[in-house]
Length: 167
Image 1 (cartoon, rainbow, N blue to C red):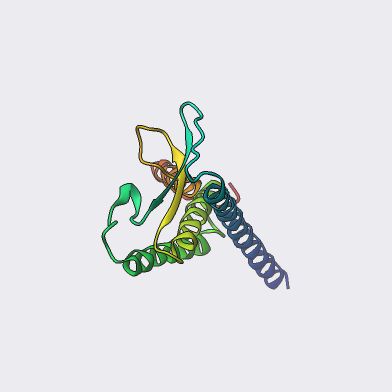
Image 2 (cartoon, rainbow, N blue to C red):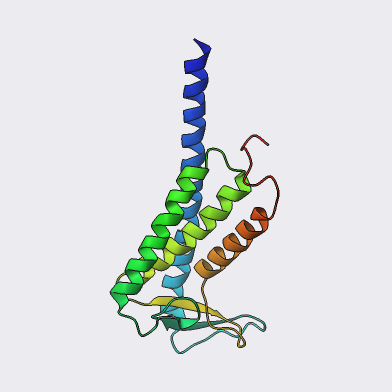
């Protein structure tokens, strides 16, 4: 009688963890999309100088570093959607057994990818608003993707990754 109860509890815990990580991805995507909407209203022709990081509106038809900027937008959208789906599947499959930080990393990547995909869908361009002067203009979604990716790389160097959730 205890086996079905523990199995049900494990399923419930897995579902809660998945839902929490998907909610985190949604919150991160929403934060970036909100900032993109604000940037499109507030920054055209009026960049804000902030020292090391300025706010300046730009649009990128390509992906990182304007790669594939000349490609048809449907191609970039399709490839981006495919990659975003792969990240969502990886999060779903690993969430129950992986360490929290592993799931948070995937949620950050998913949130950033989803925000950029949603932003790109209407016109084939991503809205960028963070500008350093020495690096291409980028957005918060890009920060989520890069930080999540770097954290996954760092975690993959550990001998015991991704590890059970209980540890």
